[in-house]
Length: 279
Image 1 (cartoon, helix red, strand yellow):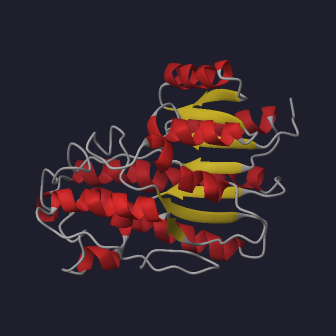
Image 2 (cartoon, helix red, strand yellow):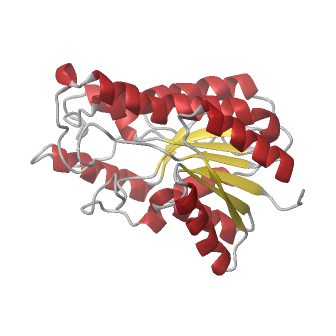
């Protein structure tokens, strides 16, 4: 059943930031595929969008499962014949309870299981899923890939003592996001000159289960940056790491909660062609 409607796949889409990203894309006319580990939760989320008058469906996807990734590829290929937008939103923070408090262990004592499980979801999952879906993305006229990342993947912000992020030492989460940003750059360079645009985005400190209830940004505001980069025009940037001003303020506030008494400030570099944070 092929359709002229644009198709977007949202991983981790059954709740929070993923679901709101899907809702905003559906509002723009996309058929949104809600992907989540729990098939029932994914279908319930998709049904909620349909009840709201949007085009949506669901698929089971644990991004760390090769079998699930293959199943998603087959499902989209058979039902839609192409993919216009991939939002790699699924992610975990296993270093501590949430982003509003200090990590449970310092970097030198972080358990191997935390590192391995974090990288399976935050790094290997998005890479392997993107690789598998590239043939379907290449069938779109304007394919877009959005990797949901974080300013905590910035080497500069984590290594400068004056940075408010200096003490946010979530070694599993931070390193996985830094690695994801590198994948964004490398794939963008490989695909430069094609119609595909791939960018990492920082949504800010958002009131989700991961962000915690003390976060500054609403889910609606947090989804805006991902939606913006999922719908870039043909002359839009690729290979960048981008954030909005409100997201920057939220993220700085988040790490300031971890570093008691710090003074927040913005440390983001901008470019008209490829906005990105400092490396």
